[in-house]
Each structure stands twice: as C-alpha cells, then as structure tokens.
Length: 517
Image (tube, rainbow, N blue to C red; front, top):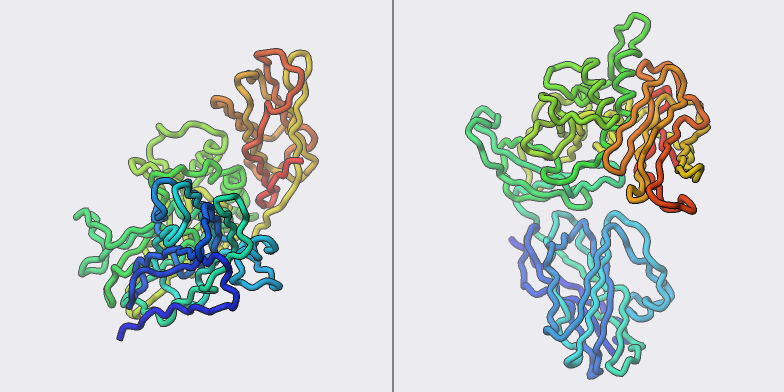
C-alpha cells in the first residue's frame, strides 16, 4: 500500500507581521524519484512590502534541487536573485526561536561546513505593487533515503516596506518540513562513489548496461545503456531503471567533455613509477607494486605490463611534453575520440579487482559503493581513496618553499628556494605577465644526478627535477632561477609572477605539498 507524505507544521506563538512558509504543491502519494514543487509563500498581513530576502537549508541526502527550476512568481516589474552553496548548514542562535527569521538574521551564529546540507538564498524587489502570495517556486527530486524528518527549513529573512522601513517581525509557521512515510521504489538502486576531498565528482556519470543471456555485454551490437546519470555533489546516483534478479554491468565514466585537471599526473606519480622499477630488493624480484590496481593504472600503454616505457611516458607528462601524436597511450583524457584508461569497481576489493563490475539487484532497494582510478594516478590524488595500497600507507607531508622576484639590471629574476634536504623530485608551474615580461632562461642548481626539465607554453612555465634512480636528492637552497627580459620600464615586480602548482616527492615516494611562504 502506498503511503502519504505528512507535512508537519509546528506552530510558534508569534507569527509576526510577515509570514513566509514553504508549501508543497502536489498531493500524494509520492515515490522516491518523484519531482515535487515547493512554493515559497508570503503573507504580508496588509503591509506594503516591496523587498524580501531569505535563506534556507535543505538536506542533500533527501532532496536534490532540479537544475534551473527556480521560477519567480511576482510578475515582470521585479528584480530577483538566487544563490546556492553546497555543503553548508546554518547555526541557529539557541536564544532565539527557530521560527523567528528576522531575529535569527540579526543575531544568528553564521554557517559551518556540513556535507549533508546545502544553503540557498532568494531575494525579490517589486516596483509595481506589494509582494504577496507565491514569491518563487522550485522543484526537488526525492532521493532514496530514510528518516525524512526536518529536511527543509527557512532560517533567516529580511524585508522592507515601500517607504524603506525594515520589517521588524518576520516569521515562519513551517519550522521544519517533514516528509513522513515515504514509499521507496521497487528495485531502487543507489550508487555511492568514493572520491578525494576537493574533487568535483559531479563531472562523472554512472553507466548501467544490460547483459545478454551469457551474462556479458555484447558491445558488437552497439547496445544502449539502461541508465546514464550524473553523480550529485555527494557522489551519489539513484535510478529505478533496473529490474530485480537481472544482471547488469556498471561503470563509473570519465568526465567526458569536461576539462580534465592538469595535475592528475605529477612528479610524485612519475617518481613512484621509476621507484617501482628500481626498488625491487637485493635479488631484483620483489613485486613492483603491492596491489594489482597500482600495476594496472601504472601501465599507460596498450600492452599488458608495466615497464620503463610507461614510467618515461609519465615523466614526459610531468615535463609537459606534447604526447598527442604518440599512438597507443592511455593517459587521462575526456576526449571520447582518444583511448584512455579509467578503471572503476566495487570499493571493497577494488585494489585487487580485474575485470568488469556486475550487479544483480534482488531487494526493493540496494546500495552499491564504487571507486574509480585514473591511469597514471599512482598517488590517488584524483582517484578514489584506496586504504589497502602502499599509496595510502605512504604519507602526505607538508614542507615550505619560497618564490621571490627582484628587479636587477633591467631584468626580473625569480628565485625558487627550499631548505628541505629530503626531496627526490619537485615540480612547479608558474605564470607571468607576458605583456611586460619575456622568459630568457632557466638556471638549475639541483645537483649532478638530477634529471631537470622545463616547458614553456604561452605565459606558463613548468619546471622541476627528479632522480629517476630513487637514490639521490635535490640540492637544497635555490635550485631554480628564472630570468625574464622586461618589455617595458618597471619600478617593481608586484603582480608579475603567480604560482599555479608546487609539489615535491621525498626519497620514500611520499607526496610533499610545497606551501609557498
């Protein structure tokens, strides 16, 4: 039997001069995956209100805002705005009622980060009459979850009358919006993809393919996906397109058509690759890597084994060498016309998985945890965290570096320095104002065994060093010096140089975040 939504309106005893409520337009019953319309409705109680501003929280674990669904309802003689922030929640002042929106506005406690909540803001100014009735409407998709209590809340508001007076009393009768007894879909499948902190997982999609009678996907028939859907900001995708007791192949897709981060493969990844070749024990028989996954993503060519060729291609990527004309490479890309290696599988056992990932749903609702890895990303900086690999066992260390610029004899001298004596590799990417500067030379003072590199594209310079044998370290001090000619008369170097990226790797293959001081 289908169950109904119950919207709990918890009253408070001073509704205020102006009341703003949120009201669901559609009647029940509802299912997970349904789209509901939420109206923001104002009762001005006769005041000539010409400006309203308010913010609200909603649970991103229960509701997903439909993109471009915010519609303002006060006519054309208005100025409106809408803003949205992911992963924040409002901190209520406990001395003020949660329904006192203006009181919270004046004396609230601010916001804090919270992965389960989003914040949004709506404002409207009307010039042809008072604001009244429905201010705006939005659509939300009901996500698969349990416990639909307190999932949407107006928390602060401000408004003025037409004569410019602030409204001292704005409240809400819907203290918290509850959705009780939500009916979940049959064969509702949720995928949760693990991703590193700060990574934009929304660029990726989940793809579900139906298998044939042999339990495999016949790619020769150009089959169409059962479902393809983008991951939301929490790395989740929900679908009801699968059938019970049927086998499907599932994959996390690369960010097709999106910009691939330029620093997926860094000096840490290249150093790990060379270390895997050289650090194999006294008999040179120890395993190159501790897991099958690392071996698979280290192999960026179309053969079946990781070898020195793969390591050199990774290092060439770090150096900024153009490899676009090298056939057979499987380096990170979102160009669907080029081959790439992008692995995905169940989070549990991902480090040892070799082959496709299959699911066979049998319950009304099931959850699958997935992970992914880019080719060459041996430190998993842009791939799902793997807790059973040597990559995670290795530490991420912080160290300091300095990038200073001086004007000398009509030239700008940029000195890059650090005092860390344990770096076996370093990589920098800096930009410069090419309307005022022209790169003349890069000087290296890194020691006698380092492989130094530099690449200059437009107004960006990539440079650094690495010990491919894994035995020596970069000479501390001022290992890099960049010399620029000036195109115009300069009195100082302010604003001429800016840093995009700085990373090191120590002798034990630990990533070193180089903080610029």
